[in-house]
Image 1 (cartoon, one colour):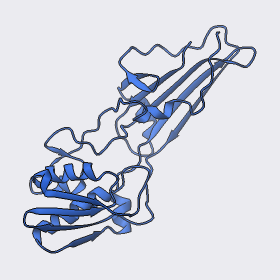
Image 2: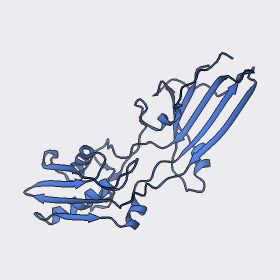
Image 3: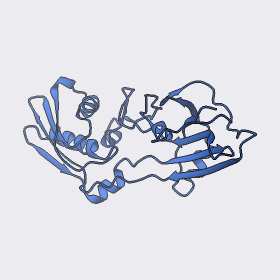
Image 4: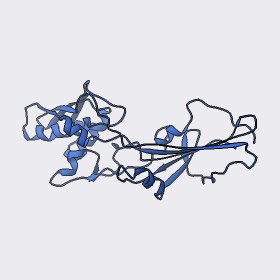
Length: 243
């Protein structure tokens, strides 16, 4: 039987009950073939009748704080209807697009400049600090405005790394060869910054404006090795023997 990988998205819960909550949710499930989630039906997970041994294991991780060594920061300046933002954001083009949406500005009037700063493997608060600075700079045109989050701000408001629950099953024949393999990954979308709807924003301050934007709606990433399913593909390929 060919290897199977299954990526499933779950809803949110408290830290103490997160694993059980994720396992019980009605899910969006995708069969992953060659690193790409598809819409083909997912076959039931059943060990071959002639397997000599079948092993199962469950692993999980909670929400994880990025906790960059330095809190998020940004500088912004608004001059003659044009905005310049200096940020340690991972993607200045995405930041520029979201600033244009929230500030109702033409994207050509916004210049986002990447500068070295604290980073993370994932989305930290750099983009949110950039919007904070931009909002203040718009009130104080001509003056550069520097915003530096406190450590408390960073730990309270940064987007945390996504949790996951992983269920694995493998069957071996009498020679110790793998004859069946299944790897189910349950978790949240790994994308929280790419807006699809005009009235939604991933930026923190946008949710608290006088006319607030709706919070970003996560969606499954079905690109090659592009979402949580990338964690379901073994780093070292191995053969599946005939059962």
